[in-house]
Amino acid sequence: MEIVTSVLTVYLVVSGACPLSNRYQPEFEKLRAEYQPRGVRFEQVSTDTAEGLRTASRLGARVTPQAVVTGSRGSAVYRGRIDDRMPALGVHRRPTRHDLREAIEALLAGKSPPVRETTAIGCAIAYPPAKATTGVTFARHAAPLLYRHCTPCHHTGGDAPFALESFGDAAPRAAVIAEVVRRGLMPPWKADPGPLEFEGAHRLTGGEIRLLESWARDGAPRGDPGIEPAAPKFQPGWKLGAPDRTVRMQKPVEVPATGEDIYTCVVIPLGLKQTRYVRAFEFKPGNRRTVHHALMFLDASGAARRNGEVYPCFGVPGFLPSASLGGWTPGFGPTSYPPLTAVTLRPGMDLVLQLHYHPTGTIETDQSELALYFTETAPTRRMMDVALGSRNIDIPAGEARYIVRDHFTLPVPVEVTGIIPHAHYICREMRGTAIRPDGRRIPLITVRGWDFNWQRHYRYKHPFTLPAGTRIEMEFLYDNSAANPRNPSNPPRRVTWGGGSLDEMAGLHVQVIPANDDDARELGQSLWGKIMRELGGGILKR
Ligand code: HEC
Image (cartoon, rainbow, N blue to C red):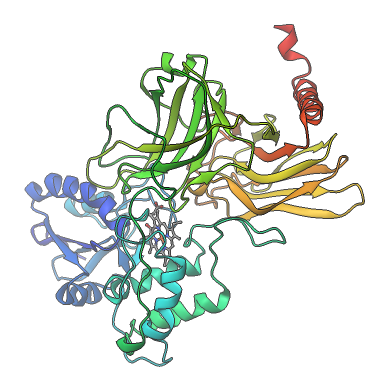
Protein backbone atom coordinates (compact mmCIF):
# COMPACT_ATOMS: atom_id res chain seq x y z
CA MET A 1 0.00 0.00 0.00
CA GLU A 2 1.31 3.44 -0.90
CA ILE A 3 1.15 5.95 1.88
CA VAL A 4 1.09 9.68 1.26
CA THR A 5 2.41 11.18 4.45
CA SER A 6 0.68 14.53 4.12
CA VAL A 7 -2.68 12.88 4.77
CA LEU A 8 -1.62 10.82 7.75
CA THR A 9 -4.26 11.43 10.42
CA VAL A 10 -3.98 10.31 14.03
CA TYR A 11 -7.35 10.01 15.74
CA LEU A 12 -7.12 9.90 19.51
CA VAL A 13 -10.32 8.47 20.90
CA VAL A 14 -10.77 9.84 24.44
CA SER A 15 -13.38 10.34 27.13
CA GLY A 16 -13.40 12.86 29.94
CA ALA A 17 -15.35 10.26 31.95
CA CYS A 18 -12.39 7.86 31.85
CA PRO A 19 -9.52 8.53 34.31
CA LEU A 20 -7.19 6.36 32.22
CA SER A 21 -7.89 8.49 29.18
CA ASN A 22 -7.29 11.71 31.16
CA ARG A 23 -4.02 10.31 32.45
CA TYR A 24 -2.75 10.00 28.85
CA GLN A 25 -3.56 13.60 27.90
CA PRO A 26 0.02 14.95 28.34
CA GLU A 27 1.33 12.12 26.14
CA PHE A 28 -1.15 13.16 23.41
CA GLU A 29 0.02 16.77 23.64
CA LYS A 30 3.63 15.64 23.34
CA LEU A 31 2.96 13.55 20.24
CA ARG A 32 0.95 16.36 18.67
CA ALA A 33 3.69 18.95 19.35
CA GLU A 34 6.26 16.60 17.85
CA TYR A 35 4.50 15.30 14.75
CA GLN A 36 2.11 18.09 13.74
CA PRO A 37 5.05 20.16 12.38
CA ARG A 38 6.03 17.07 10.36
CA GLY A 39 2.71 17.12 8.52
CA VAL A 40 0.70 14.66 10.63
CA ARG A 41 -2.87 15.71 11.40
CA PHE A 42 -4.19 15.09 14.90
CA GLU A 43 -7.84 14.82 15.81
CA GLN A 44 -9.16 14.20 19.25
CA VAL A 45 -12.46 12.29 19.20
CA SER A 46 -14.44 12.52 22.43
CA THR A 47 -16.95 9.73 22.99
CA ASP A 48 -18.74 12.04 25.44
CA THR A 49 -20.61 13.61 22.50
CA ALA A 50 -23.03 11.89 20.08
CA GLU A 51 -20.94 12.95 17.10
CA GLY A 52 -17.72 11.71 18.69
CA LEU A 53 -19.40 8.39 19.45
CA ARG A 54 -20.35 8.03 15.77
CA THR A 55 -16.78 8.81 14.68
CA ALA A 56 -15.36 6.36 17.23
CA SER A 57 -17.70 3.67 15.92
CA ARG A 58 -16.71 4.40 12.30
CA LEU A 59 -13.03 4.09 13.33
CA GLY A 60 -13.69 0.76 15.02
CA ALA A 61 -12.57 1.99 18.46
CA ARG A 62 -13.56 -0.22 21.40
CA VAL A 63 -12.06 1.58 24.41
CA THR A 64 -10.70 4.98 25.43
CA PRO A 65 -7.94 5.97 25.16
CA GLN A 66 -6.84 4.52 21.87
CA ALA A 67 -5.36 5.67 18.61
CA VAL A 68 -6.43 5.05 15.05
CA VAL A 69 -4.12 6.22 12.27
CA THR A 70 -5.53 6.56 8.80
CA GLY A 71 -3.52 6.82 5.59
CA SER A 72 -4.09 8.35 2.19
CA ARG A 73 -7.29 6.48 1.42
CA GLY A 74 -8.81 7.11 4.79
CA SER A 75 -8.46 3.48 5.84
CA ALA A 76 -6.85 2.54 9.14
CA VAL A 77 -3.13 1.78 8.96
CA TYR A 78 -2.68 1.48 12.74
CA ARG A 79 -5.23 0.83 15.44
CA GLY A 80 -4.60 0.27 19.13
CA ARG A 81 -2.69 1.44 22.18
CA ILE A 82 -0.45 4.50 22.42
CA ASP A 83 2.18 2.52 24.35
CA ASP A 84 2.31 -0.49 26.67
CA ARG A 85 2.28 1.33 30.03
CA MET A 86 -1.10 -0.27 30.87
CA PRO A 87 -0.72 -4.02 30.24
CA ALA A 88 -4.10 -4.69 31.90
CA LEU A 89 -6.90 -2.66 33.47
CA GLY A 90 -5.75 -1.23 36.78
CA VAL A 91 -2.03 -1.88 36.09
CA HIS A 92 0.45 0.90 35.31
CA ARG A 93 4.15 0.47 34.63
CA ARG A 94 7.01 2.04 32.72
CA PRO A 95 6.31 1.72 28.98
CA THR A 96 8.77 -0.31 26.90
CA ARG A 97 6.91 -0.23 23.55
CA HIS A 98 5.73 3.05 22.06
CA ASP A 99 3.48 1.51 19.44
CA LEU A 100 1.78 4.67 18.18
CA ARG A 101 5.07 6.55 17.90
CA GLU A 102 6.72 3.58 16.15
CA ALA A 103 3.78 3.39 13.72
CA ILE A 104 3.95 7.12 12.91
CA GLU A 105 7.73 6.98 12.44
CA ALA A 106 7.44 4.03 10.05
CA LEU A 107 4.61 5.66 8.09
CA LEU A 108 6.54 8.93 7.82
CA ALA A 109 9.45 6.93 6.42
CA GLY A 110 7.08 5.44 3.81
CA LYS A 111 7.03 2.01 5.45
CA SER A 112 4.32 -0.08 7.06
CA PRO A 113 4.07 0.12 10.86
CA PRO A 114 5.90 -2.73 12.65
CA VAL A 115 2.57 -3.79 14.15
CA ARG A 116 -0.73 -2.77 12.52
CA GLU A 117 -3.00 -3.60 15.41
CA THR A 118 -2.43 -3.74 19.17
CA THR A 119 -4.88 -4.23 22.03
CA ALA A 120 -5.71 -0.95 23.70
CA ILE A 121 -6.53 -1.21 27.41
CA GLY A 122 -8.94 1.36 28.77
CA CYS A 123 -12.55 2.21 29.47
CA ALA A 124 -14.97 0.33 27.23
CA ILE A 125 -16.93 2.71 24.98
CA ALA A 126 -20.68 2.62 25.62
CA TYR A 127 -22.18 2.28 22.13
CA PRO A 128 -25.97 2.31 21.94
CA PRO A 129 -27.21 -1.26 21.37
CA ALA A 130 -29.47 -2.36 18.55
CA LYS A 131 -32.31 -2.89 21.02
CA ALA A 132 -32.81 -3.54 24.71
CA THR A 133 -33.65 -7.15 25.41
CA THR A 134 -33.35 -8.11 29.06
CA GLY A 135 -35.60 -5.55 30.75
CA VAL A 136 -32.85 -4.63 33.23
CA THR A 137 -33.08 -0.92 34.03
CA PHE A 138 -31.20 1.66 36.06
CA ALA A 139 -34.23 2.54 38.15
CA ARG A 140 -35.08 -0.99 39.26
CA HIS A 141 -31.78 -2.90 39.12
CA ALA A 142 -28.58 -0.92 38.60
CA ALA A 143 -29.24 2.08 40.88
CA PRO A 144 -29.71 0.07 44.11
CA LEU A 145 -26.51 -1.89 43.40
CA LEU A 146 -24.39 1.11 42.47
CA TYR A 147 -25.67 3.20 45.38
CA ARG A 148 -24.88 0.45 47.88
CA HIS A 149 -21.54 -0.76 46.58
CA CYS A 150 -20.02 2.15 44.67
CA THR A 151 -21.42 5.48 45.86
CA PRO A 152 -19.73 5.22 49.32
CA CYS A 153 -16.51 6.12 47.44
CA HIS A 154 -17.93 7.46 44.17
CA HIS A 155 -19.75 10.59 45.43
CA THR A 156 -19.04 14.30 45.13
CA GLY A 157 -16.20 14.99 47.55
CA GLY A 158 -15.71 11.22 48.04
CA ASP A 159 -12.57 9.12 47.68
CA ALA A 160 -13.01 8.06 44.02
CA PRO A 161 -12.23 10.25 41.01
CA PHE A 162 -15.84 10.58 39.77
CA ALA A 163 -19.34 10.39 41.24
CA LEU A 164 -21.93 7.63 40.66
CA GLU A 165 -24.89 9.41 42.24
CA SER A 166 -27.40 9.62 39.42
CA PHE A 167 -28.51 8.09 36.14
CA GLY A 168 -26.62 10.89 34.37
CA ASP A 169 -23.38 9.86 36.18
CA ALA A 170 -23.75 6.13 35.56
CA ALA A 171 -25.22 5.74 32.06
CA PRO A 172 -22.26 7.09 30.04
CA ARG A 173 -19.98 4.78 32.06
CA ALA A 174 -22.15 1.66 31.83
CA ALA A 175 -19.73 -0.31 29.66
CA VAL A 176 -16.69 0.38 31.82
CA ILE A 177 -18.72 -0.28 34.98
CA ALA A 178 -19.66 -3.71 33.60
CA GLU A 179 -16.02 -4.38 32.75
CA VAL A 180 -14.53 -3.38 36.13
CA VAL A 181 -17.08 -5.42 38.08
CA ARG A 182 -16.68 -8.45 35.80
CA ARG A 183 -12.91 -8.35 36.33
CA GLY A 184 -13.33 -7.88 40.08
CA LEU A 185 -11.42 -4.56 39.99
CA MET A 186 -14.31 -2.66 41.57
CA PRO A 187 -15.28 -2.45 44.34
CA PRO A 188 -11.57 -2.61 45.19
CA TRP A 189 -11.70 -5.42 47.73
CA LYS A 190 -9.04 -8.10 47.37
CA ALA A 191 -9.71 -10.56 50.21
CA ASP A 192 -11.77 -13.63 49.29
CA PRO A 193 -14.92 -14.24 51.31
CA GLY A 194 -14.22 -16.70 54.14
CA PRO A 195 -15.68 -17.78 57.45
CA LEU A 196 -14.26 -14.67 59.19
CA GLU A 197 -15.85 -11.38 58.14
CA PHE A 198 -13.82 -8.22 57.63
CA GLU A 199 -14.98 -4.70 58.46
CA GLY A 200 -15.95 -2.69 55.39
CA ALA A 201 -15.97 -5.66 52.97
CA HIS A 202 -17.47 -4.76 49.59
CA ARG A 203 -18.16 -7.58 47.16
CA LEU A 204 -20.72 -8.15 44.43
CA THR A 205 -22.32 -11.55 43.94
CA GLY A 206 -22.20 -13.27 40.54
CA GLY A 207 -25.86 -12.39 40.04
CA GLU A 208 -25.24 -8.72 40.77
CA ILE A 209 -22.37 -8.64 38.31
CA ARG A 210 -24.55 -10.25 35.62
CA LEU A 211 -27.27 -7.62 36.22
CA LEU A 212 -24.82 -4.77 35.65
CA GLU A 213 -23.51 -6.53 32.54
CA SER A 214 -27.04 -6.93 31.13
CA TRP A 215 -27.82 -3.30 31.88
CA ALA A 216 -24.70 -2.17 29.99
CA ARG A 217 -25.30 -4.54 27.06
CA ASP A 218 -28.81 -3.17 26.68
CA GLY A 219 -27.46 0.37 26.37
CA ALA A 220 -28.03 1.48 29.96
CA PRO A 221 -31.80 2.10 29.84
CA ARG A 222 -33.23 4.25 32.62
CA GLY A 223 -36.62 2.62 33.20
CA ASP A 224 -39.21 4.42 35.32
CA PRO A 225 -37.59 7.36 37.15
CA GLY A 226 -40.57 7.26 39.54
CA ILE A 227 -39.25 4.08 41.22
CA GLU A 228 -35.57 5.14 41.23
CA PRO A 229 -34.12 5.09 44.77
CA ALA A 230 -32.53 8.31 46.09
CA ALA A 231 -28.72 8.29 46.10
CA PRO A 232 -27.31 8.00 49.62
CA LYS A 233 -26.06 11.26 51.16
CA PHE A 234 -22.63 11.56 52.73
CA GLN A 235 -21.75 14.21 55.29
CA PRO A 236 -18.61 16.16 54.50
CA GLY A 237 -16.11 16.60 57.32
CA TRP A 238 -14.62 14.31 59.98
CA LYS A 239 -16.75 11.24 60.59
CA LEU A 240 -16.03 11.03 64.34
CA GLY A 241 -16.79 14.69 65.00
CA ALA A 242 -14.45 17.50 66.04
CA PRO A 243 -10.92 16.10 66.48
CA ASP A 244 -8.72 16.83 69.51
CA ARG A 245 -5.88 17.66 67.17
CA THR A 246 -5.40 17.92 63.41
CA VAL A 247 -2.01 17.44 61.81
CA ARG A 248 -1.43 18.72 58.31
CA MET A 249 1.52 18.40 55.96
CA GLN A 250 3.54 21.59 56.43
CA LYS A 251 3.95 22.20 52.69
CA PRO A 252 2.06 20.88 49.68
CA VAL A 253 3.74 18.13 47.65
CA GLU A 254 3.68 18.56 43.88
CA VAL A 255 2.85 15.53 41.74
CA PRO A 256 4.03 15.76 38.11
CA ALA A 257 1.41 15.33 35.37
CA THR A 258 2.98 12.20 33.90
CA GLY A 259 5.38 9.39 34.65
CA GLU A 260 5.27 6.57 37.11
CA ASP A 261 3.50 6.51 40.45
CA ILE A 262 5.29 8.38 43.22
CA TYR A 263 6.04 7.19 46.77
CA THR A 264 6.88 10.01 49.15
CA CYS A 265 7.52 10.24 52.87
CA VAL A 266 6.59 13.49 54.61
CA VAL A 267 7.88 14.18 58.12
CA ILE A 268 5.62 16.28 60.35
CA PRO A 269 6.91 17.29 63.81
CA LEU A 270 4.07 16.84 66.31
CA GLY A 271 5.50 19.40 68.74
CA LEU A 272 3.85 17.72 71.74
CA LYS A 273 4.45 19.18 75.23
CA GLN A 274 2.97 16.17 77.01
CA THR A 275 2.24 12.49 76.39
CA ARG A 276 -1.03 11.80 74.55
CA TYR A 277 -2.98 8.61 73.93
CA VAL A 278 -4.64 8.23 70.53
CA ARG A 279 -7.87 6.24 70.53
CA ALA A 280 -8.84 6.97 66.90
CA PHE A 281 -7.70 8.76 63.78
CA GLU A 282 -8.97 9.70 60.36
CA PHE A 283 -6.86 10.48 57.32
CA LYS A 284 -8.14 13.05 54.83
CA PRO A 285 -6.31 13.20 51.51
CA GLY A 286 -5.67 16.78 50.46
CA ASN A 287 -6.26 15.90 46.81
CA ARG A 288 -8.34 12.83 46.14
CA ARG A 289 -7.49 12.76 42.45
CA THR A 290 -3.87 11.91 43.14
CA VAL A 291 -3.54 10.35 46.64
CA HIS A 292 -3.85 6.59 46.30
CA HIS A 293 -2.86 5.25 49.68
CA ALA A 294 -1.15 6.39 52.85
CA LEU A 295 0.60 4.77 55.81
CA MET A 296 1.15 6.62 59.07
CA PHE A 297 4.23 6.00 61.20
CA LEU A 298 5.65 7.50 64.37
CA ASP A 299 9.33 8.23 64.87
CA ALA A 300 10.81 8.95 68.29
CA SER A 301 14.43 8.60 67.13
CA GLY A 302 14.77 11.60 64.80
CA ALA A 303 15.98 9.21 62.07
CA ALA A 304 13.18 10.08 59.64
CA ARG A 305 13.81 13.82 59.73
CA ARG A 306 17.48 13.22 58.91
CA ASN A 307 16.21 12.01 55.49
CA GLY A 308 14.68 15.47 54.95
CA GLU A 309 11.19 16.86 55.37
CA VAL A 310 10.09 15.18 52.15
CA TYR A 311 11.93 12.19 50.66
CA PRO A 312 11.19 9.34 48.25
CA CYS A 313 10.23 6.05 49.94
CA PHE A 314 8.75 3.01 48.22
CA GLY A 315 7.71 -0.01 50.30
CA VAL A 316 9.77 0.64 53.44
CA PRO A 317 9.65 4.08 55.11
CA GLY A 318 13.42 4.64 55.25
CA PHE A 319 13.79 4.39 59.05
CA LEU A 320 12.74 2.01 61.82
CA PRO A 321 9.36 3.32 63.01
CA SER A 322 8.70 3.53 66.76
CA ALA A 323 5.06 2.67 66.08
CA SER A 324 2.43 2.81 63.40
CA LEU A 325 -0.95 4.50 63.56
CA GLY A 326 -2.31 2.55 60.62
CA GLY A 327 -3.08 3.09 56.97
CA TRP A 328 -5.57 4.55 54.57
CA THR A 329 -6.89 3.50 51.17
CA PRO A 330 -9.85 5.13 49.38
CA GLY A 331 -13.10 4.46 51.22
CA PHE A 332 -11.35 3.46 54.45
CA GLY A 333 -12.93 5.99 56.86
CA PRO A 334 -11.72 6.52 60.43
CA THR A 335 -9.86 3.91 62.53
CA SER A 336 -10.77 3.36 66.18
CA TYR A 337 -8.45 1.12 68.18
CA PRO A 338 -9.83 -1.69 70.34
CA PRO A 339 -10.56 -0.63 73.96
CA LEU A 340 -7.52 0.03 76.16
CA THR A 341 -5.03 -0.23 73.27
CA ALA A 342 -4.50 3.50 72.53
CA VAL A 343 -1.31 4.49 70.69
CA THR A 344 1.03 6.58 72.84
CA LEU A 345 2.43 9.84 71.46
CA ARG A 346 5.41 11.26 73.35
CA PRO A 347 6.98 14.72 73.25
CA GLY A 348 9.57 14.95 70.47
CA MET A 349 7.86 12.39 68.24
CA ASP A 350 7.42 12.99 64.52
CA LEU A 351 4.55 11.75 62.42
CA VAL A 352 5.70 10.30 59.10
CA LEU A 353 3.21 9.96 56.26
CA GLN A 354 4.14 7.53 53.52
CA LEU A 355 2.07 8.59 50.51
CA HIS A 356 1.44 6.88 47.20
CA TYR A 357 0.50 9.31 44.43
CA HIS A 358 -0.90 8.63 40.94
CA PRO A 359 -0.06 11.14 38.21
CA THR A 360 -3.39 12.23 36.66
CA GLY A 361 -2.39 13.98 33.43
CA THR A 362 -2.38 17.41 35.12
CA ILE A 363 0.17 18.73 37.64
CA GLU A 364 -1.44 18.17 41.05
CA THR A 365 -0.59 19.33 44.54
CA ASP A 366 -1.53 17.62 47.78
CA GLN A 367 -1.51 18.67 51.39
CA SER A 368 -3.09 15.81 53.32
CA GLU A 369 -4.37 15.98 56.87
CA LEU A 370 -4.90 13.70 59.84
CA ALA A 371 -7.45 14.07 62.65
CA LEU A 372 -6.43 12.63 66.02
CA TYR A 373 -8.80 11.70 68.84
CA PHE A 374 -7.28 11.39 72.30
CA THR A 375 -8.27 9.52 75.43
CA GLU A 376 -7.15 10.18 79.01
CA THR A 377 -6.74 6.45 79.57
CA ALA A 378 -3.25 5.07 79.10
CA PRO A 379 -3.26 1.72 77.26
CA THR A 380 -3.29 -1.34 79.52
CA ARG A 381 -3.55 -3.92 76.79
CA ARG A 382 -0.79 -4.34 74.25
CA MET A 383 -1.51 -4.57 70.55
CA MET A 384 1.27 -6.71 69.09
CA ASP A 385 2.35 -7.65 65.60
CA VAL A 386 2.92 -11.35 64.97
CA ALA A 387 5.08 -10.89 61.88
CA LEU A 388 5.50 -13.82 59.55
CA GLY A 389 7.58 -13.45 56.44
CA SER A 390 10.87 -14.11 54.80
CA ARG A 391 13.84 -12.25 53.43
CA ASN A 392 14.96 -15.40 51.70
CA ILE A 393 13.46 -14.48 48.32
CA ASP A 394 15.25 -15.23 45.07
CA ILE A 395 12.91 -15.63 42.13
CA PRO A 396 14.46 -16.58 38.77
CA ALA A 397 13.31 -14.56 35.75
CA GLY A 398 10.38 -16.36 34.13
CA GLU A 399 9.46 -18.45 37.25
CA ALA A 400 5.65 -18.49 37.38
CA ARG A 401 5.12 -20.38 40.67
CA TYR A 402 7.54 -19.32 43.38
CA ILE A 403 6.33 -19.96 46.90
CA VAL A 404 7.39 -18.27 50.13
CA ARG A 405 6.32 -19.92 53.41
CA ASP A 406 6.68 -19.15 57.08
CA HIS A 407 5.05 -20.22 60.34
CA PHE A 408 4.97 -19.36 64.02
CA THR A 409 3.43 -21.14 67.00
CA LEU A 410 1.73 -18.94 69.60
CA PRO A 411 3.16 -19.53 73.11
CA VAL A 412 0.15 -17.81 74.76
CA PRO A 413 -3.51 -17.26 73.89
CA VAL A 414 -4.25 -14.04 71.99
CA GLU A 415 -7.18 -12.03 70.71
CA VAL A 416 -6.84 -11.48 66.94
CA THR A 417 -8.10 -8.11 65.69
CA GLY A 418 -6.74 -7.70 62.17
CA ILE A 419 -4.26 -8.75 59.52
CA ILE A 420 -1.99 -6.91 57.06
CA PRO A 421 -0.55 -8.87 54.14
CA HIS A 422 2.32 -7.18 52.31
CA ALA A 423 4.24 -7.84 49.10
CA HIS A 424 5.16 -5.82 46.01
CA TYR A 425 3.98 -6.23 42.41
CA ILE A 426 4.57 -9.83 41.30
CA CYS A 427 2.91 -11.57 44.23
CA ARG A 428 -0.31 -13.19 42.98
CA GLU A 429 -1.79 -15.13 45.88
CA MET A 430 -1.58 -14.93 49.66
CA ARG A 431 -2.84 -17.28 52.28
CA GLY A 432 -2.75 -17.04 56.06
CA THR A 433 -4.06 -19.96 58.12
CA ALA A 434 -4.30 -20.69 61.84
CA ILE A 435 -4.16 -24.32 62.92
CA ARG A 436 -5.48 -24.75 66.43
CA PRO A 437 -3.99 -27.37 68.77
CA ASP A 438 -7.14 -29.47 68.18
CA GLY A 439 -6.27 -29.50 64.47
CA ARG A 440 -9.01 -27.16 63.35
CA ARG A 441 -7.88 -24.93 60.48
CA ILE A 442 -9.07 -21.32 60.39
CA PRO A 443 -8.39 -19.42 57.16
CA LEU A 444 -7.25 -15.98 58.39
CA ILE A 445 -7.08 -14.41 54.95
CA THR A 446 -6.97 -15.47 51.30
CA VAL A 447 -6.10 -12.99 48.59
CA ARG A 448 -6.17 -14.22 45.01
CA GLY A 449 -5.29 -11.44 42.64
CA TRP A 450 -3.10 -9.42 45.03
CA ASP A 451 -2.75 -5.82 43.88
CA PHE A 452 -0.02 -3.70 45.48
CA ASN A 453 -2.12 -0.61 44.73
CA TRP A 454 -4.92 -1.80 46.95
CA GLN A 455 -2.99 -3.09 49.96
CA ARG A 456 -4.75 -2.44 53.22
CA HIS A 457 -5.18 -3.31 56.85
CA TYR A 458 -7.97 -5.88 57.15
CA ARG A 459 -9.84 -5.66 60.44
CA TYR A 460 -11.99 -8.56 61.63
CA LYS A 461 -15.58 -7.57 62.28
CA HIS A 462 -15.60 -9.88 65.30
CA PRO A 463 -12.16 -10.22 66.94
CA PHE A 464 -11.59 -13.82 68.12
CA THR A 465 -9.31 -15.78 70.40
CA LEU A 466 -6.65 -18.28 69.38
CA PRO A 467 -5.37 -20.65 72.11
CA ALA A 468 -1.71 -21.17 73.02
CA GLY A 469 -0.17 -23.75 70.70
CA THR A 470 -1.95 -22.43 67.60
CA ARG A 471 0.33 -22.56 64.57
CA ILE A 472 0.02 -19.64 62.16
CA GLU A 473 1.11 -20.36 58.61
CA MET A 474 1.64 -18.12 55.62
CA GLU A 475 2.03 -19.08 51.98
CA PHE A 476 2.59 -16.47 49.27
CA LEU A 477 2.78 -17.27 45.55
CA TYR A 478 4.84 -15.12 43.15
CA ASP A 479 4.67 -15.04 39.36
CA ASN A 480 7.80 -13.61 37.75
CA SER A 481 6.83 -14.63 34.22
CA ALA A 482 6.19 -12.31 31.29
CA ALA A 483 2.58 -13.50 31.35
CA ASN A 484 2.00 -11.63 34.62
CA PRO A 485 0.74 -8.20 33.48
CA ARG A 486 1.70 -6.71 36.85
CA ASN A 487 5.36 -7.67 36.42
CA PRO A 488 7.13 -4.27 36.45
CA SER A 489 10.11 -5.76 34.60
CA ASN A 490 9.55 -6.46 30.95
CA PRO A 491 11.28 -8.76 30.09
CA PRO A 492 11.32 -10.35 33.58
CA ARG A 493 14.51 -10.20 35.63
CA ARG A 494 15.72 -12.09 38.71
CA VAL A 495 13.91 -10.71 41.76
CA THR A 496 15.34 -10.76 45.30
CA TRP A 497 14.25 -9.40 48.68
CA GLY A 498 14.40 -5.63 49.10
CA GLY A 499 12.52 -2.39 49.57
CA GLY A 500 12.68 -1.16 45.95
CA SER A 501 9.79 -1.35 43.52
CA LEU A 502 11.58 -4.02 41.46
CA ASP A 503 12.39 -6.11 44.57
CA GLU A 504 9.93 -8.27 46.46
CA MET A 505 8.84 -8.64 50.06
CA ALA A 506 6.76 -11.20 51.90
CA GLY A 507 5.06 -10.21 55.12
CA LEU A 508 1.96 -11.31 56.95
CA HIS A 509 1.30 -9.20 60.03
CA VAL A 510 -1.28 -10.62 62.41
CA GLN A 511 -2.48 -8.00 64.90
CA VAL A 512 -3.04 -9.57 68.29
CA ILE A 513 -3.71 -8.59 71.89
CA PRO A 514 -2.36 -10.92 74.60
CA ALA A 515 -4.50 -11.33 77.73
CA ASN A 516 -2.05 -9.66 80.15
CA ASP A 517 1.46 -8.25 80.59
CA ASP A 518 3.06 -11.62 81.36
CA ASP A 519 1.65 -13.13 78.18
CA ALA A 520 2.74 -10.07 76.20
CA ARG A 521 6.29 -10.49 77.49
CA GLU A 522 6.33 -14.18 76.65
CA LEU A 523 4.98 -13.56 73.15
CA GLY A 524 7.56 -10.80 72.65
CA GLN A 525 10.40 -13.15 73.64
CA SER A 526 9.10 -15.87 71.41
CA LEU A 527 8.87 -13.50 68.43
CA TRP A 528 12.35 -12.23 69.18
CA GLY A 529 13.59 -15.82 69.25
CA LYS A 530 12.08 -16.36 65.82
CA ILE A 531 13.90 -13.33 64.42
CA MET A 532 17.19 -14.46 65.96
CA ARG A 533 16.86 -17.96 64.52
CA GLU A 534 16.21 -16.51 61.08
CA LEU A 535 19.16 -14.16 61.22
CA GLY A 536 21.32 -17.02 62.59
CA GLY A 537 22.70 -14.70 65.24
CA GLY A 538 23.88 -12.36 62.47
CA ILE A 539 22.97 -9.28 64.49
CA LEU A 540 25.11 -10.39 67.44
CA LYS A 541 28.19 -10.97 65.31
CA ARG A 542 28.24 -7.35 64.15
C1 HEC B 1 -13.40 1.83 48.34
C2 HEC B 1 -13.71 2.88 47.41
C3 HEC B 1 -14.34 2.50 46.07
C4 HEC B 1 -15.46 1.74 45.88
C5 HEC B 1 -16.36 1.10 46.93
C6 HEC B 1 -15.65 1.70 44.45
N1 HEC B 1 -14.68 2.41 43.81
FE1 HEC B 1 -14.45 2.65 41.79
N2 HEC B 1 -12.73 3.67 42.09
C7 HEC B 1 -12.21 4.02 43.30
C8 HEC B 1 -10.97 4.75 43.09
C9 HEC B 1 -10.10 5.34 44.18
C10 HEC B 1 -10.76 4.78 41.70
C11 HEC B 1 -9.59 5.40 40.94
C12 HEC B 1 -8.71 4.35 40.39
C13 HEC B 1 -7.53 4.10 41.23
O1 HEC B 1 -7.20 4.91 42.11
O2 HEC B 1 -6.89 3.04 41.01
C14 HEC B 1 -11.89 4.11 41.10
C15 HEC B 1 -12.03 3.95 39.72
C16 HEC B 1 -13.16 3.42 39.11
C17 HEC B 1 -13.35 3.32 37.68
C18 HEC B 1 -12.41 3.79 36.60
C19 HEC B 1 -11.49 2.69 36.15
C20 HEC B 1 -10.10 2.87 36.62
O3 HEC B 1 -9.42 1.84 36.84
O4 HEC B 1 -9.63 4.01 36.79
C21 HEC B 1 -14.58 2.76 37.49
C22 HEC B 1 -15.26 2.49 36.17
C23 HEC B 1 -15.13 2.48 38.81
N3 HEC B 1 -14.24 2.88 39.78
C24 HEC B 1 -16.36 1.89 39.03
C25 HEC B 1 -16.80 1.46 40.29
C26 HEC B 1 -18.02 0.70 40.49
C27 HEC B 1 -18.98 0.30 39.38
C28 HEC B 1 -18.10 0.44 41.82
C29 HEC B 1 -19.17 -0.36 42.54
C30 HEC B 1 -19.52 -1.65 41.98
C31 HEC B 1 -16.95 1.05 42.46
N4 HEC B 1 -16.18 1.65 41.50
C32 HEC B 1 -16.69 1.01 43.84
C33 HEC B 1 -12.74 3.75 44.55
C34 HEC B 1 -13.85 2.93 44.76
